[in-house]
Length: 147
Image (tube, rainbow, N blue to C red):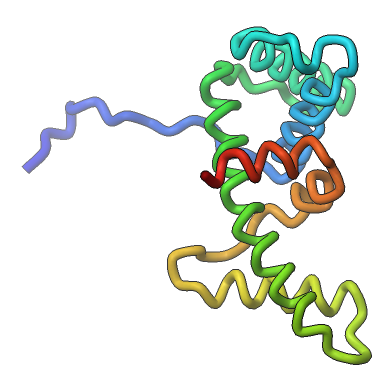
């Protein structure tokens, strides 16, 4: 039986959807930088991503949680994995190509398909998919990380 004096490892503040959105935008802005984009070391890339993330949160007058670069990187990995799975569901829905289905209907169908897979759970990153889906850079990154 654990003692009441045993310190518990508390989790940090949960990410809110706006912060996930800002994180995706920061990742895109840093990775698509035409001058530094391809010549950045991993550390430089992630530090610039954190700087862009913090700057945008300050601009939005949102509280800037002190999150280390490693946690932001980990969160982006989580987002990317979920969005990649959603992309596969969305592509499957598009291949069915039902007559009379609007893009928003197809989006809802893709969310339903994603959530019907038990290990996926609910899809919490639709706003991130809207940001990342048309980015050539993210598409290439996603493809290289699926291997």
